[in-house]
Amino acid sequence: MAIIDKTLGNVTNQQSTSQANNAAAKTKDLGKDDFLQMLVAQLKHQDPLNPMDGTDFVAQLATFSSLEQLTNMNSQLNQLGVYQATMTNTQAVNLLGKEVTVNQDNGFQVRGSTADFSYNLTRPAENVSILIYDSSGREVDRIEAGRQGSGFQTMTWSKGNNAEGLYSYAVLANDINGDRVPVETMMTGKVTGVQYRNNAIFLTINDREVTFNQVVAVKGE
Image (cartoon, rainbow, N blue to C red; front, side, top):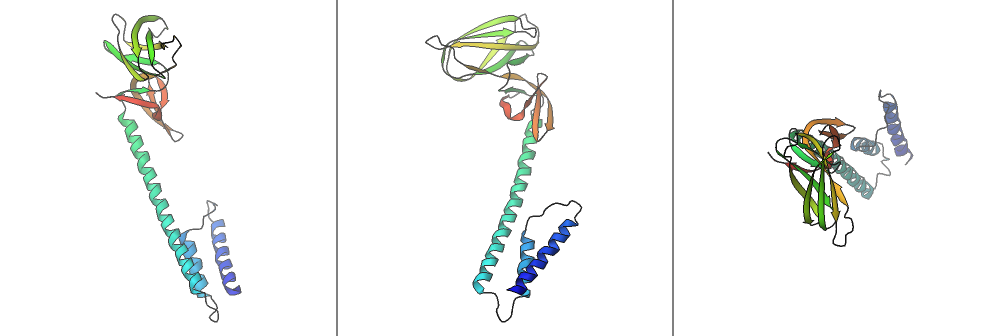
């Protein structure tokens, strides 16, 4: 109907003008309020001699109802996203001062007489040797761990007469055929800082930054 089309066009033009005058000058998506405004205008200006078909009216009401439900769902999802982000930030802050293991690097801190470090064997190993290095890269000890299964492994090293501080390790593993078994080394240390940058969380461990999602283990106190 010409009158209806003209009315809808006027409503659309008014919305466009209002949006153009907006300081932000951003494009606005058609929302449930806009849809309802156009529906009311269509009913107000319909031809009395040729009113809107009941089926079409019901279909438009159903469309409006669906749009409203989607809008409400989107709002709830946004709230859920904010809640999850808040929970993640809280978990990161709670790691301050705790000893964690991340799937990166091969360093660990020694405070006291012993220290733990972890690694991952990609398949079972018949012989596993672990070399311990001090901060200068000098080998200070060697651990013969023997046979180990595949997966996450945690070792405890007694420093003996060595000083406290930052150490690193290397794992040499061979299978029953003498072939080298790939090893994924990990870093262990206390979390001394938490930063939020570029929508990501970074932890400071052993004076190095790692992302929060790299944490694979947390040691309770």
